[in-house]
Length: 408
Image 1 (cartoon, rainbow, N blue to C red):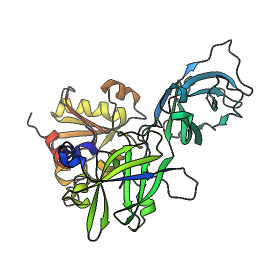
Image 2 (image 1 turned 90 degrees about the horizontal axis):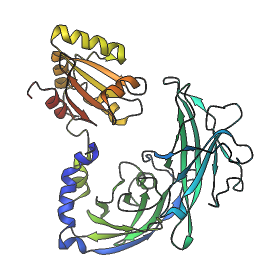
Image 3 (image 1 turned 90 degrees about the vertical axis):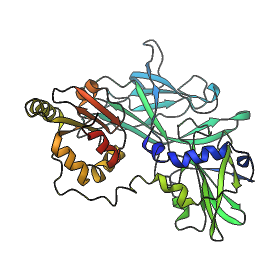
Image 4 (image 1 turned 135 degrees about the vertical axis):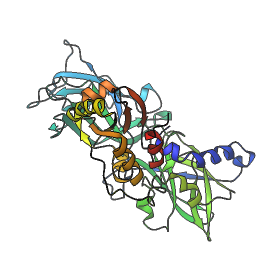
């Protein structure tokens, strides 16, 4: 269970019980037409995006004819967007002048006829090297696809592509992308003007209950921007709220059209406010009042300090705490800001542990050795270097204290 799922568990449990009751089927139905929106159209954009989807790439046959301008290495794959195979889009990734080891050209078979040469010029990305990891990144952003839905009606869908090649490695066999567009509309709910948004949460261009929605009163401060924010968007099994006459209108999701052109939800009679419903989502509610340490944890870093900590543990009887983290990991930064400097947590680490932070982008050997996949991951080793416990994902101060406790 992810941190967001865990922290919202109480609210979701109540909602789940409600959804299975007869009352859940009641309520005034609201139908809202949603339009395509993308960055650069003069409107605010979402301040979050889903995790990238991987497109497997395979080598193009040596005897295959490449489109003009394409250079080998050349690899092809399938972008699986839309309701069925007829809507998927073949992609060809090839090298280019000046970057023979990178896949810096993308040819999209937009008309889906099996020919990459009749869809216009390729999309070009300029490889850049990450100063820390030395990996080469090639990005191609704001690419508008045309996705086919029922009756072959197309709908635009904007994505951002990227490829990553480790330094001195061969061309990658994975292309990644993430959606950059969203759906947006307005509604009048019991006389109250409101803004409505839908975000595709899994990059498949099919809107279902697995995606996100957001509804906000149009008169609320900064509503046009806030309705697209991670602070307001929720999975469809969560309620939405619109203020009306000193109370909240409670909204419950019903369905999206698969193409994202509309959403249906109901105004339901339920004795809950937005403040009550959103309360369990606040990751830091319990942390803000806790005292901060005056004796910070002295962390080691990387494989060299890991080896030193394991050696020292054998002679001192101390345990080892490994914190696998990444610079791009939001929950890792939250733990740095609120958990590792919690007075009780720091005291317990300093008293019985040797702490080592492992940057997963730099320490691939330790990542492979300990088989970590999600971040942060905290692992406890006994004085002999044997793994005792591990947890994955954000941990509150109380959860960390329980993990660090000497009790089994």
